[in-house]
Image (cartoon, rainbow, N blue to C red; front, side, top):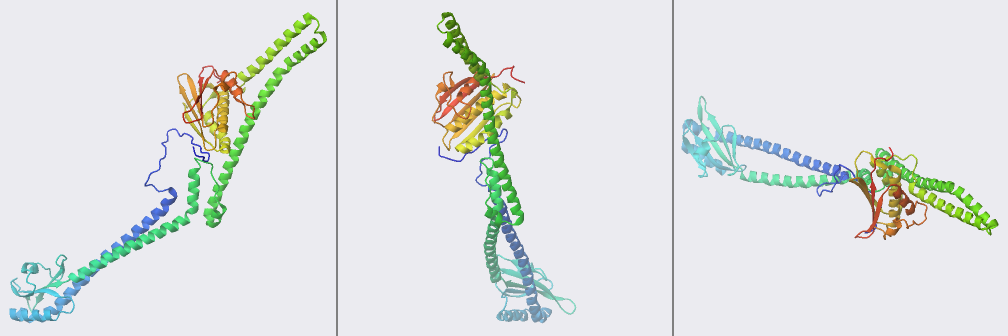
Length: 482
């Protein structure tokens, strides 16, 4: 396994693991991305609304232009309409076509008040029915043909003289409008994209301190939190600098608590060693006095057979007493205030192991498949056994490796499995003949004694991928401390 920083992966019962999604942005980038999207949408929408308003105003202007055209045409052909003179009207139409300078005509129509056509001039493809359908004093656009139809009823002195209809060629105007619309759309999209990107960059730069804060808080569940650099606080605005300084104070507090937890764990181990040493010293002192007396008697009266036999028997009984005292002390020693084991007792191991794991550069994973109620086991012995096995596993595992603890209940026993990625452990070291190497921690010999007091079975196996698996089967019993 490649070396890596120590990572803690505590189980989270009832909570699904968070897996990265390909289309989901990190939290720190969502605000700039959302702001850029809003700027883009606003720019595009406002431009589209402006284009719609501009197009409607252009249609009204075109309609007014058509009415102005009919003003001049009506004045030119009024006499012909009143006289019902088709020749006169057609001549005026022909002259109007010859004077085209602005909007060109495609066709002109003149109708009598009764609806019959008097005269026409221009494109023969335009029908009389289309001309009759043209509204008065309004414009009808035929964008497919590029024609604007305008009509007007011409009144004489007492009654309507007739009706004029003009088909104006606005194809070039519509084409120019379409080109302008596409140009505006393209320019609008480019500008909107540019401003959206600028907004994203500005907000991302302004949000850099917040992004670092969010990343620090998010990574706090996997590794020890790290302080934010002082230059980041100096570059931030006063409000943000206060928030970042509060985060740094929180990080300092977490580190102080971890150091305190490590110190408390060491003190707990030292106290256990002290209590064990005091117990052994107290129980061994009296037999040693008797043994010294027996040795002195042998020196003075060893030539007498009865005294020699009595002294040797006394020495043999004293040595046996010392052996029993040491064995019973190692096997049955437990704190006086032992109580029932709970899930919280084993979850505390994560905090006790953190300093050792960080120093060694290993990761520790706990899997506790236990009920929420108390178990019929004493908490002190089980905690001490697992703590010492895990500490030894951390010491044996090279940097970048992983130490694991899996605890579950099977039938009438609690199964504990401790795994490491070290060079391996001789199974004989957990047997009666095995002795742990002396160190500042309780050794494997004390672990063996505690396992004996718990009536537990232990086995040591080599893992396929390297390392050691220690499996403990601790029977649950109704007589556990309450």
